[in-house]
Figure 1 (cartoon, rainbow, N blue to C red):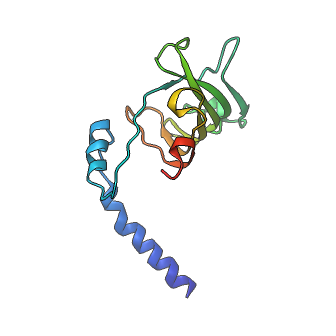
Figure 2 (figure 1 turned 180 degrees about the vertical axis):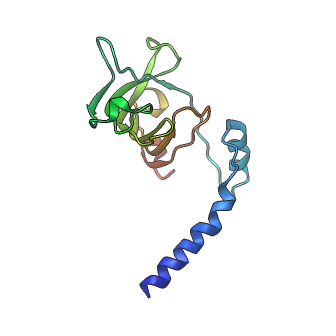
Length: 161
């Protein structure tokens, strides 16, 4: 019985894979896709912010906490791990208005291309989102122009989203 369950699960994965290939991840394509979902009532919150991950200097916001003996030899810094507490700002300038913090841990997970495994919380500290948190867990394709990452938990104004 166990083997049968595994085979059915693998068949589902194989059948599902072609449906997700060639997905356009640009903002307009995602919005178009979203409008086609069968929601009873759609409530959308749009916001735009920047987070500044500073690894060097007097006041770094991300600090390396681990690496292997081979990390320095890797073009992708494979096995590098950092802890972060980055400011979320309204604009791209580091001194623009802070609206929250991006707090968590990330590490380089790919030997061939720039990719991070990220576990982070966007903690909002001002405005309508004050006290709200979005938790993200997933693979960040560092050199892709658009990146989509799963939100795995939420609180505050995002509760039950």
